[in-house]
Image 1 (cartoon, rainbow, N blue to C red):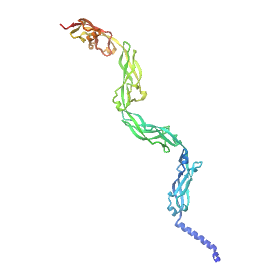
Image 2: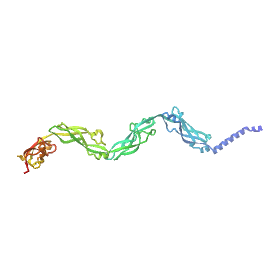
Image 3: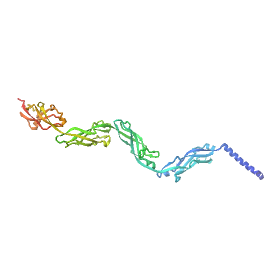
Image 4: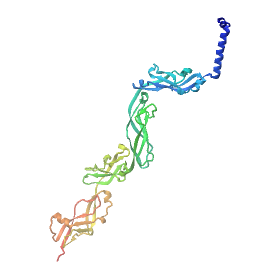
Length: 423
């Protein structure tokens, strides 16, 4: 029996080997070995080992996305998907080059998979300190309001924003701002606006890696009405004898533009400088500079600010002249005559001479025919402390209706006859 088993042993072994080869060929023909590739995202583990110590971590160049090639039989791979692949990188195993090794496993039929390969072995990280700062929020105004209106001021419900992120990025930020459009506006503009970050060169900073405490803020831009108002200067003081104000006061500029709410502006007609110019003792033109800010109505502002708040004022003063006039006596009337009395002028001439003092241009146009004299008997009696008026001749003062700025150089008196009308 033993001899039969060993007879032709070589041929028998050859036959077995040949049979195995035929079996393998049959298997590969019916269920061949193949491979499939899958795109898989690597999950970072223990990331807080860095972030908890104030580090900002960023994956470089999409190295957390890998290509995984799985080799196995067609039957095995037919029910295999990328969901069955788990790729992880444990950050606690990071090396000195900031590389984290990638580990790949499968969730099913791992014992029937011949091999798994990846196109990269590490996730490359960029690590830096986390920066944080509080920065102001500015308002940038775009365009101009409607005609007759100007932009007044802008406010936001919050005036600072807190930002955090990689220190290199946070350090670029100089300020934050919103942009509000007031084009053609005739009333306040109220809107919620996105916040943008800017560097010191007023360029927008990419904030994709920066976290902000808020992304938008409610903003109000006030729009004010403007109005050109004349400047009116009131002059005070006493000039030396023989000098007078011409009445001409020049203001440069003559008009000031104010801005304010429409409800305030509609009632304004001028800017009155009430007590800034005192000409006491001057005998020539007074030139001065006046700050008009104290005279600006409450609720308004000067367009142009402090640079537009100073005006130059010139008050014109001239030496007066004297000129004689003859007034017809029939232009002198009486008033305040006591009851039972009659009064008539007792002048020998048909006219009287008076001397007037005033500015040249006024006296030059004064016509004696327009001057009327008045004898006020009642006032005369009061001044003389008379309880009654006796008949006979009295010398009484005459007042005249004169142009503004013209006066008598000396008192004028006339003789009058007083008669009783009672029989």
